[in-house]
Amino acid sequence: AKSLIAEVGIEHMASCIACSFMDMGGIEDETFDRGYAIESTCHAPDKAGAFAEIYRVLKPGALFWGQEMCLTDKFNPDDAGHQTVKRHLQHGIALNEIATMDEVKRALEVAGFLVEELEDLADEEGDTVIPWYRPMERRHGILSTALSRTPLGRKAAIAASKLAEALGAFPKGSADVVRFMDRTADAYVAGGRTGIFTPLCCFLARKPS
Image 1 (cartoon, rainbow, N blue to C red):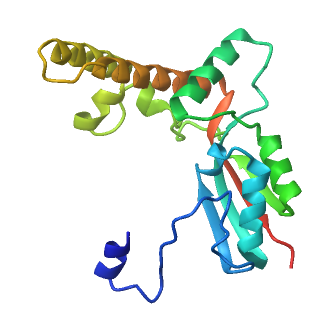
Image 2 (image 1 turned 90 degrees about the vertical axis):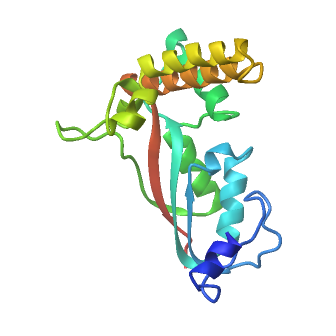
């Protein structure tokens, strides 16, 4: 990252800091004018704690925009099928838990933020709207890259990796990894079709002045 910043000549405008969003102790309070987090704080062991640390380093009045993977109001915890999809998503995306949209809002408020907007941007209707999970459901896009994402393409990849393993071209276990990725893609599609899961829970919050 530092070399790319230097390459385009913006060292005076940007810098890189390696730290955890659970502990940004190396950054002083009220440092930043704005903040954003894209599909990252969903992995936090304590969502309210992560938001509180972000809150600390933002200046009063600063905006914080985020995108989270969430369960929607359509998720039924008593539905075995819903729980199976959730479990496969947790495993495939490495999430300890998948928060609901309401839980994300509450975590922001507990941290001190004023939540100005919070909505599922995947929840849009119309013939022109392409569902976010479509590329994993059937061919969509450039042929050379789209086929590998379809169910048929993924099954072909599993078969090819098993053959490559048998021939010694791939290390043992490669087919299991491809199979694991295929199962995760199926869970994405199932979560999207049923509407119980969204990767597009987007929010805009403000630190009070």
